[in-house]
Length: 420
Image (cartoon, rainbow, N blue to C red):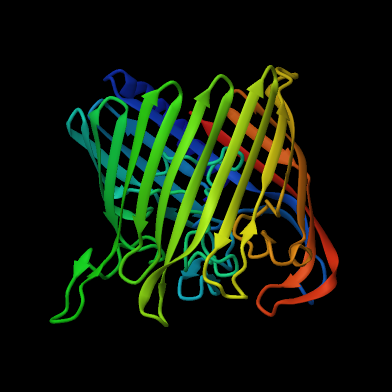
């Protein structure tokens, strides 16, 4: 789908939104493009590679490219489309957590699409995509939540790279209840994480074959309580089905007076195939703080993961990402012109195995990523661009070998978003 076509669709929906508002129905639409204007990378044992205007196309990570939301007081819906640009990555092979070769060009997929309705003012049902990401998460990248699992097996096939959804984040059925002021409860069932994109999968939510043990797919539940005074307590449990991972979370946070901060322990439970039982394999202390005063904003996200398996190849680790922003206001036709700088552990990709600092040997996972940049808006368009510099150790996670020298890479990331 060409960029002009996407913009035309947004304009069409904007005109439709004006007509819907006549009947008391609200409608929102947005389109987003992200990628790198230029980049230099180098894989181990290969020459440097240069690419220009590379658009992101990673189904489990990227934002939905085009989103349309329609709602009234008691019903609503969300249509989310994700477009894939790279002709060599048109088929996703979940058995290898990689993309299979052999495709015929760009592709458009429905993703995170749902319908919802209220049978009672305090009871809401959702059918379709039921991921609940309304609990605490950092606001620098807008989607990451600390992950308690082993750092070198965090492929999307094994676990979500970051556990940003509190219950499930696939296609299914969910219910939300608000039994009293300040209390929000949710529960959901869905297909298991990692099944083929765009399908419900071949298994029912609950299956029992003869005298064998029953099997079940993913389910989850969450609770949020706002007692007042800018505080919120949260808890959630996510189960990816029979003999699969589980994540339990609890948190306390504060939002008000220019402050947004939370502390959120995340407990990772894995199925031990050798012992044929579940085990608490790790705990991530997900820590985030943000402070705004005058034109300044300071943000910091530091997830610290403690691994409990006792395996020498499964060390504890941490990540960090800090950012400072200064809003200069109007600059020419640009509103909210905001220079900023981010520093972190290989922040450019979020699911890189090397993007962590191991507690057992800091030198083997030297990661330093610095990105000066600028954000601004022009009318309904929001833009960001930066120059990202990555310094990292030449360390192969699979073999555990360290060459003793560091590498340097760079890229020019950008994003452009239209909201209507």
